[in-house]
Length: 191
Image (cartoon, rainbow, N blue to C red; front, side, top):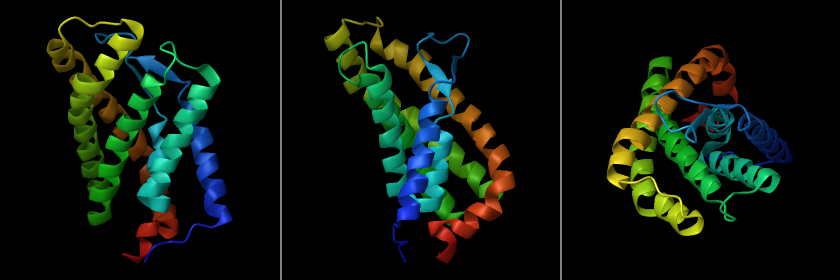
């Protein structure tokens, strides 16, 4: 049975989107990766939105976060390539996590789900970078990374794995304290 969206749901999505937007500004690079590849924790509120309101809640939260970010700081390319990449990375991380956790609703299940989301993000973002994101940066900004395959294999793929593991650790620290509350208010509670 689907949970009907109420005004309260829209307000919660707005709050989670705003929190996610703010968390985008708290970012840091990982040594040995290019400095423009940064980790932030903006997908944590998106994960909470997914658990509370389902996949559509996650997509809306991720979308609002990136629209707010683009409107506030713009883009060097003139088009929101980075925001689109961030949107797809978030969706490729959060949605597999949600669907795996939906079937394995324990703390171990959540850990497994987050690792599944991590590998989904790493693999599919590598493919998107190869075919869409890096060619867009090259076209709009004349930004080149040299050998694209080498860059993806030695940069994008391992970076997204490390980023996913960092977010997994942080989320699991929060989830262990919030699991009962999340389960009580989640769209999953009747499954």
